[in-house]
Image 1 (tube, rainbow, N blue to C red):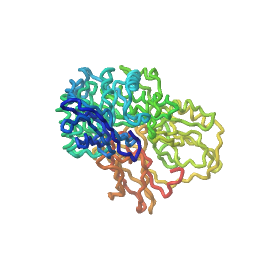
Image 2 (image 1 turned 90 degrees about the horizontal axis):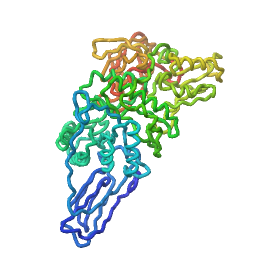
Image 3 (image 1 turned 135 degrees about the vertical axis):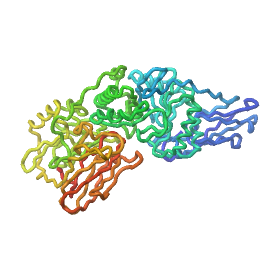
Image 4 (image 1 turned 180 degrees about the vertical axis):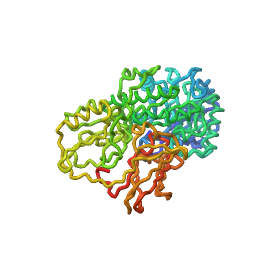
Length: 629
């Protein structure tokens, strides 16, 4: 077996004497393309890394026999997610000679069913409390945990209050499913096709292998054909769903685990919700009126923490999100992302080298009935935002609430404890070169740390100035502000603060093209959720333009948007019909040349990630490097 980019072919050889009149070879799995030969004769080939296959050997049997299973790496649609994590392997496992073909086990009686917006298991409503499992075992060279490790994972997760494991984009060894049956852990099986074409009817035979493999296990209560996939042929999806229902009568299945706008056929709704606590509080009202089936958040509650900590804030964020969902959408289930860190992901319950970040006792709250969440206060005063004269303050996704203070006089423990709650505005500072940055937020989501300035001190033309991207309208925020303005921090001179921006602060929003209401270009917190919706909307604003060539800067506008000024389209960003792009957190600049005077801008937007639209800033400028608007 090998892991790497350039993988050499692998060959498993087996010498055996004739076992009887007839014989078969059984291969537990073989990655990715396998050819079986016996005594130099081709017996059969198999494509797909995950499931067992069997060939009869009888026509080529001799008294003494030499069997080979040759394997090669192939880029294949069902390779799943592990190759994206740098884990590839070639080779065959579990090669056995049999004197009878293996028994085909019938599907188990299905324990799950759907009744309206509720998921039932064994006839009783169930809230899925799941964890996402990618099958990442770097120390084993592939997705092959031994029995002791499987038992430890199941027992520890049950001790933390989880009732389900979502095998995401891999097929676990059958022993893992056996132990889930034995130890009372439910399973959501997501088949290993991620953002890859699911449009070839020949794929049906491979899915039939998947269904035969997991169908006999009563622990498997949910199935999804693919993940976050815009490239699904509707006819192929329909065939696969019908095949699953035929082979596993009564199974609960969905075509695409992604977002509400991306599902086409299936038994439940699925959303991948990656939001910070400030955004999360508005999520339930966004989807409540759209639900006709059970809602399961197939990926959610991703909060990063570095291997050596701190881990407490990540746990508190997950606690808040789980309890808020329980209170506001009582029937909704969720899957926490994810079980284990990888080289480019730090949101695991385990570190990359396999150490648990929390004791099971720290998850004691994670039992039914779940308690009410802590409250995040509504906006009750000034928050930094995209306004004329303000320090530039982009939005960030806030994956990793890890705080670094540069001065021991700052209350680091307090800031760390409240950075995702009473201090969270959703924004950071930009263009802080030359200032004394007092507080940094360190984001570990990409695997390596990215540092965002949160509080900076400086002098401008001799005047001392403290700038903060935290909230200061809450009790803890006011307490922090008192410390910031009353302490004699080092304040380097940075010269005059000059801003040239025409900031588009006030907008009107319509979700139907007829009724309009006023919103700020700002976060959901400032707008009390008014700019959080699923689907399409229109924003419009009037503005006075100085004339000439300027840059229209758009940040955190929507997942897709199209901009028109005075009826003429000036730019577009994102994916108009699909879901892959990442536009919302990618700043865009559009050149504009208008006559001086009054103009109207209309922005057609589409949202599927639930983070809110027209958060901004959106402004005209000639110089993006200026510190203030």
